Amino acid sequence: MICAETKQRFQVERAEPEAGTPRSVVAQQRAQIAREMLAECRFCAHDCGVNRLAGETGLCHAGAETRFFSAQTEVSDELELIPTYAIALSGCDLRCDFCITGASSWNPRAGLGLDAAAMAARARAALHNGARTVMVLGGEPTIHLPAALELVSLLPDSAKLIWKTNAHGSAQARELLDGMFDVWLADFKFGNDDCALRLAKVPNYCRVVQENLRWFAGTERRAPPRRVGWPTLPHRAGTVPGAPIGELVVRHLLMPGHVECCWRPVAKWLAKHLPGVKVNLRAGFWPAWQAARHVELRQTISKPENIRALALAQEYNLNLIP
Amino acid sequence: MNQAPDQLNHLPAGETSLSEFLILPGGRILAHNLSPTMAEVLRQLDPEDEAMNRRAARTCRSSQSNGAQIKKLETPHVVSYNSKQHP
Image (cartoon, rainbow over all chains, first blue to last red; front, side):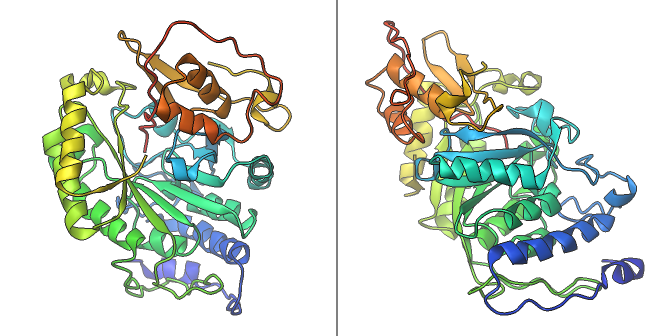
């Protein structure tokens, strides 16, 4: 619940955007709102409520500044999305021991300060040179919504934008993101809460991720309950608040020793609740960062495990994409 | 591994890119943050690798067409990718 003090903080006079407002304009307005919301940050499901503008930090340790640790054209993502200009923001709200970019993802002070205008110029240059998409990722970009939205505001309205996320965002974050991206590239890492807690130190993982995936897919687009102090958000031209915009692609990183406990439940849930959704099963796990803390994660995926995982995908009739 | 000159990747002046690889004992290579130029290198390591061919084909522009000289390695490898495993 947002307190009365926050109500006053968020009650800022804003003109309602006119119909036909382009994405860039809407993103700029939302970026301003999102920045104010840093005063009581609830962008992710940890729901810390800290005042990041005043130097307080929550579980992600991020302050008000956004930094990035990588920005380059890449071709290692889904074939239908590459080449993509991938902008990786520092810091994350999860603590996956096997994170391949753990040093930067766990540290919001890693890398360089983000100059949104300069980064947008780099992205535009990449698009000019043949990149098909621009991807905003992390770490976890949700914890940097103000900067991410500002970046969107500076990119061409016609650019195909990808939001690469751990799907651990809040309803508040989803409302800010609504209509801003063309592809939701979302992880579903763990098939049960025990593995999530042990490997990523995150509670209630499955419920939160499933809620986010349903929203990304457009199967659960109820407007969040109006809360005290929550401003009316501008919406993009041609869109209806709460209506699905953007395509969902679900990723699962196959982890050694977790085919049955994690992949099977993920596959089963996707088959039941999001039939036909695009799924990318990633078999290239390598024991990075602090994976060695867990015996089963000290290796790569074995061939039998890979075969078993693919068989499960077939069993559940998943729509696997390369 | 730091990459070759900016123009190979069609990067803005002053930019470089970074790709990471894990080479497994059997010769399999896992790649992370694969750049267009490195995809082309991996494709040449194993021209029969269909997956890498498809990735290299989607690069912004062929590094070959830009004058890059990539030495063809003779040792066959099984090239994999698909290991961008951070959130």
